[in-house]
Image (cartoon, rainbow, N blue to C red; front, top):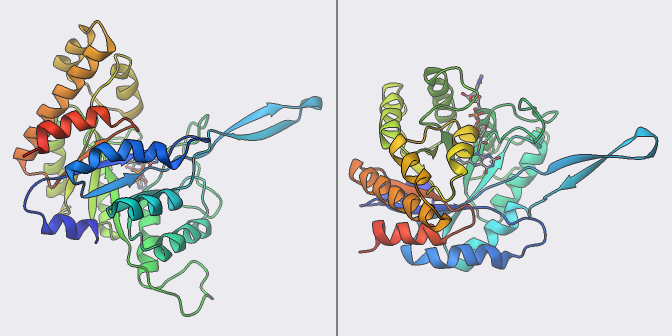
Length: 319
Ligand code: FAD
């Protein structure tokens, strides 16, 4: 079923989460270990993130550089199919612009369509490590909006290679990313909302947000979206703080504010397990408030660690 239909049919706030493909060498069992404890909360869907290959250049004799791909993770096509088959749950692979030409993207989309995976989350992806600015692949997409357009095109049988005849129409349903505290590269919130609306106008059906720790920022974002004419469901993305270091790394990486009350509580902790407890309590409080606000889904970033999300879901979703 399409995520938008699941949301429209729901009578209460739903639970969903995101998992990361494991790094090279790990098996599908590591993913099952993350998912297993969360299945009792009846997730509406599970997102599978996509990570670009990281590239390093090794110096060779004579000053030549050799390109080496590191930290390669298994592809989302296989992982998504495995999750869908094992758990009979809707799975939402993330597809990114970075690193792919439009034709390569099309090949991936053909695989998803063939396997009956019809829900996709379309994002631009981050810069390659070491790059200051995002660089699209030759004949690739610069913005997520273009990726949405490509997918919507396939839904009406329009493929990249115009000479492919008798193409099969896909039935993809697309989610896109939104940023309550604006995307790090956006000059201002208005500009960010303007481009978010373009993704929706291109055919995306719902938004999942970047993590945030202050619900007022999310509520203000929803209001700005509505004022701009964005009417689709907006799903908050939530992550519990788990280490002291994240006070700086999360705010730096994702351009997000950590409220003073939370940062003081974390700083006062003596051990990592105390920090985890503070993070879990904060996330439970956020989740309950957002549910009262009427969000369609509470979506959690597991970072491949389900223990904290289990505790949060116990407090928020257990009847
Ligand atoms: P876009 O919507 O393309 O926007 C990128 C920037 O360009 C924004 O500042 C926007 O305002 C601006 N912009 C957009 N269109 C235009 C235009 N036409 N002209 C000028 N400016 C424009 N990254 C991964 O690599 N893998 C993942 O699995 C992943 N999952 C994510 C899940 C969620 C819920 C979120 C919120 C983010 C995720 N990301 C992931 C991170 C995301 O790829 C980065 O934040 C990326 O930098 C932007 O992606 P986007 O799709 O929002 O980009």
